[in-house]
Length: 161
Image (cartoon, helix red, strand yellow):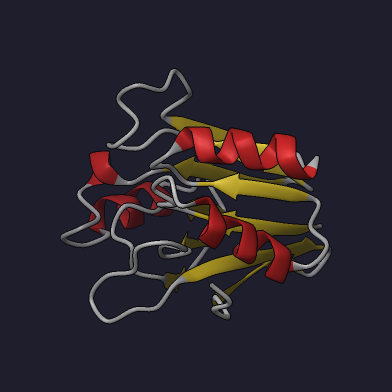
Protein backbone atom coordinates (compact mmCIF):
# COMPACT_ATOMS: atom_id res chain seq x y z
CA UNK A 1 0.00 0.00 0.00
CA UNK A 2 1.28 3.47 -0.90
CA UNK A 3 0.19 6.29 1.40
CA UNK A 4 0.73 10.04 1.09
CA UNK A 5 1.28 11.92 4.35
CA UNK A 6 1.04 15.67 4.93
CA UNK A 7 0.66 18.01 7.87
CA UNK A 8 0.24 21.69 8.60
CA UNK A 9 -1.24 22.77 5.28
CA UNK A 10 -2.69 25.91 6.95
CA UNK A 11 -5.22 26.74 4.27
CA UNK A 12 -2.71 26.91 1.40
CA UNK A 13 -4.28 24.59 -1.17
CA UNK A 14 -1.79 25.26 -3.98
CA UNK A 15 1.08 23.74 -1.98
CA UNK A 16 -1.15 20.85 -0.92
CA UNK A 17 -2.27 20.17 -4.52
CA UNK A 18 1.34 20.16 -5.71
CA UNK A 19 2.32 17.69 -3.01
CA UNK A 20 -0.53 15.32 -3.88
CA UNK A 21 0.33 15.61 -7.57
CA UNK A 22 3.99 14.86 -6.90
CA UNK A 23 3.13 11.83 -4.74
CA UNK A 24 2.00 9.88 -7.79
CA UNK A 25 -0.57 7.16 -7.31
CA UNK A 26 -1.50 6.71 -3.67
CA UNK A 27 -4.06 4.46 -1.99
CA UNK A 28 -4.67 6.73 1.00
CA UNK A 29 -3.88 10.30 2.07
CA UNK A 30 -3.16 11.03 5.74
CA UNK A 31 -3.29 14.60 7.06
CA UNK A 32 -1.77 15.08 10.54
CA UNK A 33 -3.63 18.25 11.42
CA UNK A 34 -3.76 22.00 11.20
CA UNK A 35 -6.40 22.77 8.69
CA UNK A 36 -8.46 19.63 8.86
CA UNK A 37 -10.81 21.14 6.26
CA UNK A 38 -7.94 21.18 3.73
CA UNK A 39 -7.80 17.39 3.96
CA UNK A 40 -11.54 16.98 3.47
CA UNK A 41 -11.48 19.32 0.46
CA UNK A 42 -8.54 17.47 -1.09
CA UNK A 43 -10.35 14.17 -0.66
CA UNK A 44 -13.41 15.53 -2.45
CA UNK A 45 -11.27 17.11 -5.17
CA UNK A 46 -9.18 14.01 -5.91
CA UNK A 47 -11.42 11.12 -4.90
CA UNK A 48 -8.58 9.76 -2.74
CA UNK A 49 -9.60 8.28 0.61
CA UNK A 50 -8.46 10.63 3.41
CA UNK A 51 -7.73 10.07 7.09
CA UNK A 52 -7.28 13.35 8.95
CA UNK A 53 -7.00 14.66 12.50
CA UNK A 54 -7.41 18.10 13.97
CA UNK A 55 -4.55 20.22 15.26
CA UNK A 56 -4.15 23.24 17.52
CA UNK A 57 -5.29 25.58 14.71
CA UNK A 58 -8.46 23.56 14.10
CA UNK A 59 -10.52 24.96 16.98
CA UNK A 60 -13.40 25.44 14.52
CA UNK A 61 -13.31 21.86 13.15
CA UNK A 62 -15.25 18.91 14.53
CA UNK A 63 -12.85 16.15 13.44
CA UNK A 64 -11.01 13.65 15.64
CA UNK A 65 -7.87 14.62 17.58
CA UNK A 66 -6.34 11.19 16.94
CA UNK A 67 -6.98 8.25 14.65
CA UNK A 68 -5.87 4.67 15.15
CA UNK A 69 -5.41 2.68 11.96
CA UNK A 70 -4.71 -0.96 11.24
CA UNK A 71 -3.15 -1.30 7.81
CA UNK A 72 -2.03 -4.76 6.75
CA UNK A 73 -1.66 -5.71 10.42
CA UNK A 74 0.43 -2.65 11.37
CA UNK A 75 -0.95 -0.41 14.09
CA UNK A 76 -0.66 3.30 13.31
CA UNK A 77 -1.51 6.33 15.43
CA UNK A 78 -2.15 9.65 13.67
CA UNK A 79 -1.99 12.74 15.90
CA UNK A 80 -1.09 16.37 15.39
CA UNK A 81 1.44 16.30 18.23
CA UNK A 82 0.65 19.54 20.03
CA UNK A 83 -0.66 17.61 23.04
CA UNK A 84 2.68 15.78 23.24
CA UNK A 85 4.97 18.83 23.26
CA UNK A 86 6.65 17.96 19.96
CA UNK A 87 7.86 21.50 19.34
CA UNK A 88 10.35 20.91 22.15
CA UNK A 89 11.14 17.22 21.52
CA UNK A 90 9.41 13.97 20.68
CA UNK A 91 10.06 12.25 24.04
CA UNK A 92 6.38 11.72 24.87
CA UNK A 93 5.75 10.12 21.47
CA UNK A 94 8.85 7.94 21.86
CA UNK A 95 7.47 6.75 25.22
CA UNK A 96 4.09 6.06 23.64
CA UNK A 97 5.74 4.07 20.82
CA UNK A 98 7.87 2.06 23.26
CA UNK A 99 4.74 0.85 25.05
CA UNK A 100 4.27 -1.44 22.04
CA UNK A 101 0.71 -0.61 21.00
CA UNK A 102 1.79 1.07 17.75
CA UNK A 103 4.22 0.23 14.97
CA UNK A 104 4.15 3.80 13.65
CA UNK A 105 3.14 7.20 14.99
CA UNK A 106 2.50 9.95 12.46
CA UNK A 107 2.48 13.52 13.73
CA UNK A 108 3.03 17.14 12.69
CA UNK A 109 2.92 20.48 14.54
CA UNK A 110 6.67 21.27 14.50
CA UNK A 111 6.68 21.91 10.72
CA UNK A 112 10.03 20.05 10.61
CA UNK A 113 10.29 16.70 8.79
CA UNK A 114 11.63 13.78 10.77
CA UNK A 115 11.84 10.01 10.68
CA UNK A 116 12.91 8.34 13.91
CA UNK A 117 13.46 4.58 13.81
CA UNK A 118 13.32 2.85 17.19
CA UNK A 119 13.29 -0.81 18.18
CA UNK A 120 9.76 -1.96 17.48
CA UNK A 121 8.53 1.09 15.62
CA UNK A 122 8.94 4.43 13.95
CA UNK A 123 7.92 8.08 14.32
CA UNK A 124 7.13 10.05 11.16
CA UNK A 125 6.66 13.79 10.84
CA UNK A 126 6.21 14.83 7.18
CA UNK A 127 7.06 18.46 8.00
CA UNK A 128 4.88 21.18 6.53
CA UNK A 129 3.96 21.30 2.87
CA UNK A 130 3.09 25.01 3.18
CA UNK A 131 5.05 26.61 6.06
CA UNK A 132 8.39 24.94 6.82
CA UNK A 133 10.37 25.95 9.90
CA UNK A 134 13.91 25.76 11.35
CA UNK A 135 15.64 25.63 8.00
CA UNK A 136 13.55 22.80 6.59
CA UNK A 137 11.86 22.93 3.20
CA UNK A 138 8.29 22.38 2.02
CA UNK A 139 7.87 18.64 2.46
CA UNK A 140 5.56 15.63 2.51
CA UNK A 141 6.04 11.92 3.11
CA UNK A 142 5.29 8.68 1.33
CA UNK A 143 4.66 5.62 3.43
CA UNK A 144 5.02 2.17 1.88
CA UNK A 145 3.40 -0.68 3.78
CA UNK A 146 3.88 -4.17 2.42
CA UNK A 147 4.92 -7.68 3.46
CA UNK A 148 8.44 -6.33 4.17
CA UNK A 149 7.15 -3.82 6.74
CA UNK A 150 6.59 -0.08 7.10
CA UNK A 151 8.92 2.18 5.11
CA UNK A 152 8.59 5.99 5.41
CA UNK A 153 10.24 8.46 3.02
CA UNK A 154 10.31 12.26 3.15
CA UNK A 155 10.33 14.34 -0.03
CA UNK A 156 10.83 18.03 -0.65
CA UNK A 157 8.15 19.72 -2.68
CA UNK A 158 9.37 20.60 -6.15
CA UNK A 159 8.19 24.19 -6.29
CA UNK A 160 6.03 25.12 -9.25
CA UNK A 161 4.15 28.07 -7.78
